[in-house]
Image (cartoon, rainbow, N blue to C red; front, side):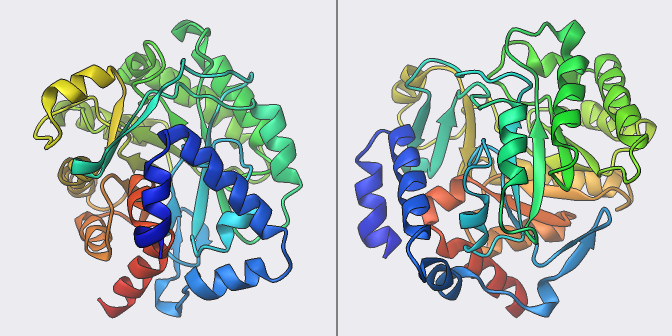
Length: 344
């Protein structure tokens, strides 16, 4: 029904407007008695063989929703009915910010891809934390993806990440430090070895004084070279990270089917979806092999089918995340992947 009826209607709208329309309708529908039970019946497929324990957390299945879809933790209860094993909210910054000027989200249907330059638009850490504190579904594992405000200079970036950590530590199950988005000026400079170690150490010091420290992960770009990936693994060991998220969006525009002039006209932004699948898998495999399988990886990038998910897991991912595939394939993709993994 999604591909035949809903998707054509949504794809006739501006991409960001369609996103908000889906949010509003899902929120309204969930208030109708019986709707959540119906959604679970349609989409929530669970099986004992899907369960796994990763960085000390017990996931009912390995399929998660990537950060960027529910930036403000506005729909965690509703999203839980669609069968996700976990949901990552954010990216959250200390202070609320509007993000980049619109339009800032674009579809490339020929490539089953998205280009976004959202710019960490979110309600701010305090508001998001309060919203998570009120959620009804306490079984759903929540990840907190955190970043810095646009106006914060890189020299003070660690202060922003610590502030986000402090605000969210009691309401999320794990953290992801995001320094790999291409849509905040100079953010990717924080992926360099020295500033990244200093930033992660600051957050980890705050984490380790808690009675129950949270798993701390780092989200990396697919555009890193092998030597940079080697640095990431060294940094992960030195700062005692619990895992990595591989990968974020790419700034590459190679091998797209969409007309090059049309792509250029869209301007800057991170590319996600099918064109990212192969590179994301390469990065996962490299990190898994170089770490001898000792560092858990959440695999993300171009997952549009059960076969794509299986590819990521066979490359070394412990868990996977959807975003663009969820947009193009619809909510049934979660159960399709989980059913496919059980059959495999």
